[in-house]
Image 1 (tube, rainbow, N blue to C red):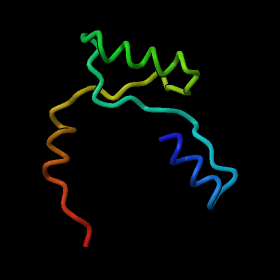
Image 2 (image 1 turned 180 degrees about the vertical axis):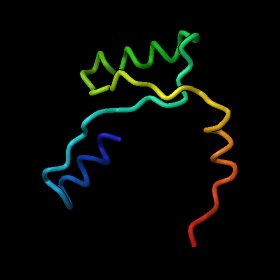
Image 3 (image 1 turned 180 degrees about the horizontal axis):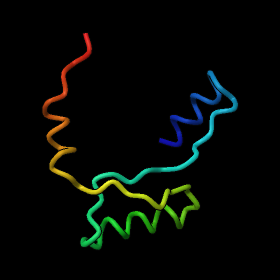
Image 4 (image 1 turned 45 degrees about the vertical axis):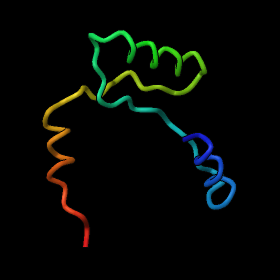
Length: 69
């Protein structure tokens, strides 16, 4: 993702910056997701404190999404 941001910054928008990373489909009871978040923070990436949990409604919204015509 950061490579894409750098490419866009170079080609189109030198002022583009990443304000923060939103973690989605987060499962707080599982240890692996928290380890991944900790690794991102350990690399000094701007991980936001709010997480979007794994939700049936989120999954269903992807199934019912209609293509834009």
